[in-house]
Length: 244
Image (cartoon, rainbow, N blue to C red; front, top):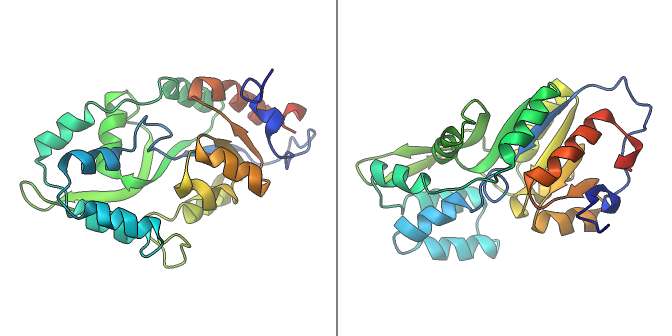
């Protein structure tokens, strides 16, 4: 059996004791782009509808010259598309086919599932609605239409304390839910999830987040898709020793 057959075998030591049955409950926060969706939706929009200049903003962000909020605000201002074109494009976005089952399993355990993204709320709502998941709470940047073909980004969840200068400070969103529910299972895939993963109570990690969690000693389970992650959700909730 390899690590991805038994993902928790490669995880950092569990922070919970097997007999800890009196602890507060769990909830789930999941990233969207590349975690729930199979592509980064904002990148797909920029590749199709972006005016010249958005690539330079991307390079400036990658080099650390600007934060992700400034990058995305500038890039969204360079989108040239109608509302109909936006909707038609979003209709092509696929999600992980196992995500609905993962949500159903979490909710069967009485767990709240919340989508927390530094992406675009309007896009996320559209995609989730298409897949029968419109009931999920979404916390993300606000995409607003300025005129027939132009758009702007509003970031009501930004924080001056955010180390990544993100439009949505995931660390603050996590702390809010820890205060309410006690423990947060965070699900993510890449660099926008690095900071918050170190504060979560447990992490289900895809793609680049796997190596980050391993190198930082963060308790995590690597997974490829949500169908693989769902059985481990059950074991997490039950607090079995197999989590160690």
